[in-house]
Length: 633
Image 1 (cartoon, one colour):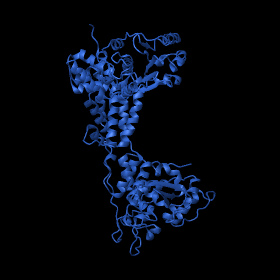
Image 2 (cartoon, one colour):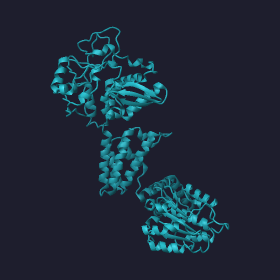
Image 3 (tube, one colour):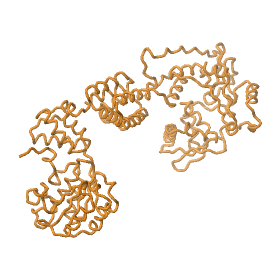
Image 4 (tube, helix red, strand yellow):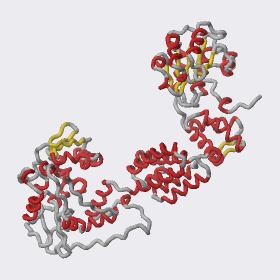
């Protein structure tokens, strides 16, 4: 007797032997038991998941001779009808290949033979595999017979591309979608086969075969046949990797660590070693994408115990993982048609390292906020540089503080217009950051305070006890602006407009409406909603609204001349004549007229003064950036 491969020898012969398709087998068994059989069934799914096998088992159940009363939900598999169907020689079950019998003449012959009674069993079954290969004329010839066949005729269709089957055919069939099998289901079945065949199959080897099968049981059984022919009855994971060119998990983890740690030479060395070993680089890239996906999932939903993916996720931010997945997803498409796969993968890894080193606007704001507050820099924001390429940090100059003033130490001005001199450093302090003094203190020569400093808002430390019944926004806006002035300084321009259920509406000046993408970004809105929810003790939604009304808490702004009456020279002379910075009220008035006129940009003196600020110098050193003075026309 000739040798039978595992895919044929272990083909399911009963409903309970079908792996991973319980939703299909249970429905068919219940339909047989309840005498609710349809005239046509369509089995849809990827290759090797059991479409044709399920159809054959249903044909056995319809014609099994073990039950004298008709169809059975558990065919015996040993009667003449079951054996003939399993061997493909039954006169009552005709298997037709849709690819080779797709003409209208073949369907006409089928329709004529359907009128004759079955030879042995109660039903004549037509099983058409790859039914989507039939021509349009063949489908049309089948329509009437399919909708109203003789009582003794059943149609069973199987296809991998259901979208190619006409809707008129689909509407006349009961459709069953078979699932792609999981690696656990496939590896368990492979271990079952190995036990029956007296093969010592390592669990890691079975898992490698299941992963390479990509959800197809028939592919996994064929691969097991091939690896047995290679190494005999003892199979380990290394044999599977050697035969099929799979990449060991340790190698994928090594590549992932090299990428996350921005160690480009180490990552390229892994690719070079795999290419020299003849491994499939497309599969290597797919394994890397799968690893990054697992790392992302471990960050979103941390596992109960530490895993390799969770440990790798500690060294990379979630935003960077999303960027890498998009980048390597595009690389997979290019690699599929590339003649030099190693070149494409090397370039993709180098670009991925550059993407990890890119700085986002959020990173810049975090660093500037930390520099202003004097707190340690965020760990993930400092790029990993080699000793040869790391810039030498400049020494931050000491800033003198007047000893006679009882005020706390004030942060240096963060404005381009401030003139900084070595002997007399200038300070400009926001009103919200200066507590109301008990006695009036005149500004010293080295400190320039704004005009509204005497009527400043209370300190952030007093924000824990104000009343929130009438205006919860005041408390939240003051706290956010005090904690992060660079990110949330704009919230002080908002005015509480009312609350409807769980939604708090805040009015903002119309000048902020054009900056919704930069100010009201998702993370900022989420932070605001968290603060409101914590303050009010329930889940709150934040709803910004832009109106012409200014916040009541702000001083009345001075009138602004129409745009036609103002020129850049006039604006410059006005600034120079005052000799001081505008007040907070003037800074927050509507920008409607200003947006209509061209911005004069910064003068060379103002730009040099801005670059001389020690905090700006430090930020430029960290991000290795430069400042461009551009004019808006």
